[in-house]
Length: 124
Image 1: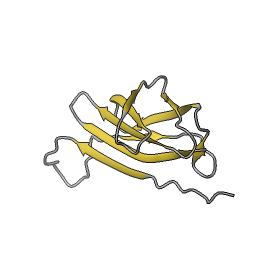
Image 2 (image 1 turned 90 degrees about the horizontal axis):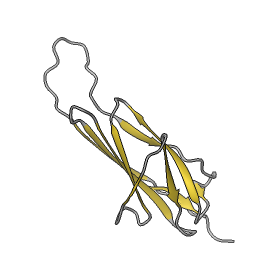
Image 3 (image 1 turned 90 degrees about the vertical axis):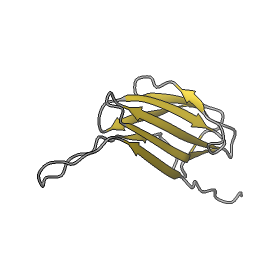
């Protein structure tokens, strides 16, 4: 029996927007968005190796243009993925590999979110 593998997911997010003084004492919402990847995984955060795997992706916050990239080497290299009807399709690497995502959302005012999820899931 092989030892249990763990998925050490690391998420980083950077927001870029113009801000200024908000009048009054009431809080003002920031023009930021976040990206959610919601793959259907096994309990050990894994998916089948070598398979085409559909991953739902959504933007929470304001509307904007979304681009998504995938990496199979923890972010050393990235490949662009088309987003179709709120999903991306990934070709999973060989067993024992990991899948990482990078997304960018930008709106008409130039506000951007860049989000990276290293080791989002394992392959088995």
